[in-house]
Image 1 (tube, rainbow, N blue to C red):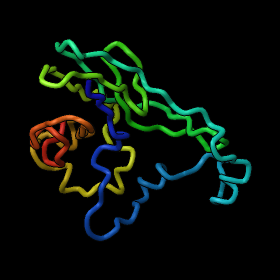
Image 2 (image 1 turned 180 degrees about the vertical axis):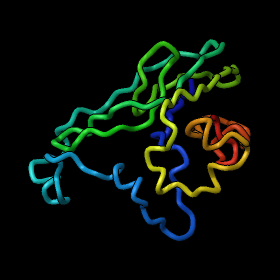
Image 3 (image 1 turned 90 degrees about the vertical axis):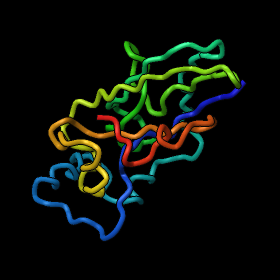
Image 4 (image 1 turned 30 degrees about the vertical axis):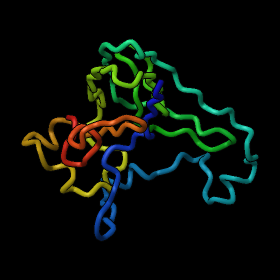
Length: 173
């Protein structure tokens, strides 16, 4: 038996080169809630280590093979221990909930499965758009930026050909 685990999904968040300066429009993305902590000290003032329950993702048993259809979308993640919740990207079976982390898919060695990844992110800009290197999002598609947020899925614990395993220029729109 092989256990697949998904990396937490923050598609195309790597920035290569010089840091980008937020524009006026980007400022709204970084406006904290009035009750949000103003510093790391405030954020962790009441935080106690090892008190937030560990998130146990759904387990999808695909050890007999077959196909699976997964959505990639937005969800609100509760970080726990007094930290503010935040919108993140995650995974979920079509018809199910999107979660961060996404589900664990159990597979068996030498029994192939097929996974169809659907980009179900509704917003037109990436959550961390100001930090995304623009050249990563403008390749392989003539429709960007009008076709949604590009995503990349990388799988842990599986032999996957490189072109299907999370390279920045193989985005899913």
